[in-house]
Image 1 (tube, rainbow, N blue to C red):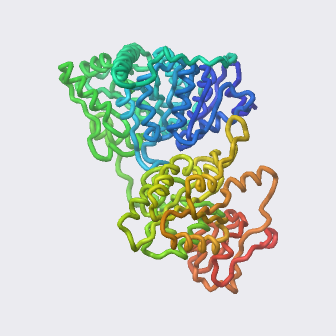
Image 2: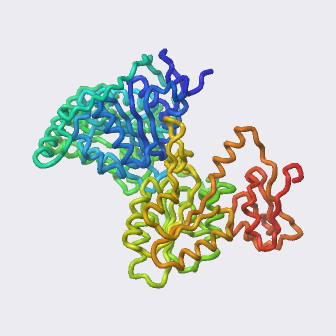
Image 3: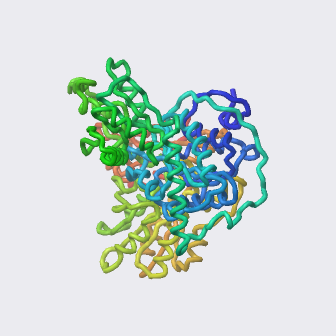
Length: 628
């Protein structure tokens, strides 16, 4: 049986069960993509994993994880204007790249460029439910919206062809369910092509400098291209009518809502006509107008904001069509994924005669599922850091969180991080909190990946303006939260193996930070001392709290054949059940029983020993596994 990496570059046509994030990589291969860039983030990181499953010497394109989404977009843009088909992918991070993205449709992208967005309705792994379709309309950038892995594959190929033909960027908008769904996908053949290494950038293909009168000329050209794409949308078989002979009720849907609708209607005696949208921008205006004209009522099913609903109502008004168009009937319709249960509720609310509402589940049959908040892994260095910090700070201290695994420090029992905005914000926000503040210390947190992603400007600003804050850099030598991707601080790359390692301390020193403390987080006493010392100094100070990601460490050890030799154990005679191990340190390996006794879950404990120093009576000890 072939491995994923072998399948993705197999020359013969084949079909295989794949998730959407893997199917799109095969589409990249078949379409002759030459440069792929990204910044990791769910729900799209498995795209990078699928790419890296192809051995580097056999990989038919260049791939890198860039330091952030903006840089990734710019690298892909540079490759495109040099004549190479490029792709950039990210989760809800188009806002980070927006400064560059909004310029792309003004340019002549001679190689073509596909932008893969992984939107996250339901905020499964994001801090908001950002609807990136707004960015597409602001920048005049076409959008394809697949609904299953087969469509992910097909629409990437269509998007790439359209992009090369129009010399403009095209968005392939995925969502969490589309990225992670698995289905059997039929793939075409792949014919390897020798990549030209001759630079093909020609400024005459531009202009590429959007200044003065050129900017307006470039905008006119972008709008002309969009008009041509609108004609493409009108004629594309991807936008299609499912004619069920029902001229009273019609539904417009695409992506996940379309397939949820089919699931809900399975076995129904009466079905509405359905217009399946594959391109949500620009809309096939005339075909939608005809659909509205031939139906009494049209229901729009779309996740997040009522964008298509509003545009469809405008089309009906402009065309003088007397039709009732409805969509977001309640506030809750603006929130979350349109999975079958939600789609059914919306449909039955609109047309109860078509689909009666399901009876509410009785209290007797409801399952009480306890809340299970996210938590840091056993042995996580961040836990040791937060435990040490909590012991030395005052209760009125102001602490600012950032994005990463360490964001979980905001939860009990640590309560470290009282405000969160976005990646890299902590230093800027902390600086603002320090102004007109003579009594409360301000500490800010950031991880090493986020430090390189968006933290550097905030540090430079704090040093330059001499803001009175202490930055704690939680360094774990990976981008842990999204799947252990490398970053500039690791000295490893996705394309050459070994790269230039950029040391966080050297960067801080280069920016002019005069006071820097550094220790391993497992040395909790020393970390507390360094933090107290830093907070007593007026101005900007930094503490580097480092420890390798233990999830990554233990996985690598296990792959190398190593097993856990020791684990924590509780000396029940010494333990006086004050529960610091559970209530303050809160490693998930500790189990508190109804009678107050604490034991260790051996399925979770990795034997790292970071917990030993947390017990005031020294009741925690390490024992060999065979002695447990």
